[in-house]
Amino acid sequence: MLLTNALIVTLKGNNDFGMIPDGAIAIRDDKIVWVGPTADIPDSVDVLPRHDLAGKCITPGLIDCHTHIVHGGNRAAEFEMRLNGASYAEIAKAGGGILSTVTATRTATEETLLADALPRVDALIAEGVTLVEIKSGYGLDHDSELKMLRVARRIAQERPITVRTSFLGAHAVPAESISDPETYISETCIPALRAAHAQRLVDAVDGFCEGIAFTPAQLAPLFDVARELGLPVKLHAEQLTNSGGTQLAAKYAALSADHLEYATISDAQAMAAVGTSAVLLPGAYYTLNETQLPPVQALRDAGVPIALATDCNPGSSPLTSILLTMNMACTLFRMTPLEALLGVTAHAAKALGASDHGRIIPGGRADLCVWNIQHPAELAYRIGFNPLHSRIFGGALS
Ligand code: DI6
Ligand code: FE
Image (cartoon, rainbow, N blue to C red; front, side, top):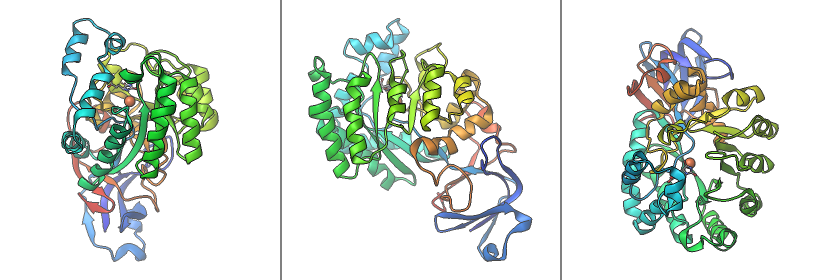
């Protein structure tokens, strides 16, 4: 198809929206084959069926590059506890937090996990998300981790969305292994990773480096296996304290280091040196009532691409709005609307190693959003308003 008469936000460069007023996009199958001014449409694509967009705005399909969207139950009761004075770390230490979701996830059937996750995925789709990353990490035993990853893969069959999975067996130390995290990594986590990889369930390997989770030394053997299997790594790093996660991530040339509230200037420089992206998660910052801001200016100065994501999870970020995530990044982290849009498109794609996503360029995948807006800054500006007109997924309206 040939989309004409649109304000196209290509995000072709890195420091501007790359706008083409009265632009056109030619799509064949699931690929963008040409983009430029409507006046310059080449003969080769002029034969395609035309859709006049009457001045609407087109951006790349949005990307949520860090979610735990598959999980059992919810933690509204814990939300209430926190508001009555308990801290996140205290709740985790008392066997609540992540571990209560582990129990709910272990006991849920695959069908229940899928049925619970789909409405959350639908909320993302309704705001133009075309690619979502989904982590395991609430199973913490062999079968339950694989179950979560199978559900994540099934989401891509049930809905018009691309799913990238991350194995997060090192999300927390399960209650039965609490005195011996090293053995949990070697005897449970690594064998589960190998099995999940053999069943093609894993696109990347993630971990949680934190006082309440794992140390860099405990995570290193897992990352060694990821490397052996040819899988890229990512890491939850410096969310609650500076625990050396960013340096570990940089040592393994991770795709991304995520959260980063307690990261330093030298952490940002270590990431820049190996091309590791930052993934900032304003929903978790907001939900935990955090006051330590991630080092946005240090990341900018070092040239680290900054991605944004919902972190959709039942504990620290029960958020399924990518547009609100953009708004929070601007208001809470003082990022610009351009940075926010790059954060959920081109930079999110980079954080997933998905190079054909996130920009409107010839050869790129035809995942697009059509918006009822006059300028792309409107996407981050409004709060709780969804201007999506339509969504094109793999070259088809959906
Ligand atoms: N950091 C987070 O914010 C989520 N996981 C993580 O490593 C929270 C997970 C949860 O509380 O269930
Ligand atoms: Fe997370």
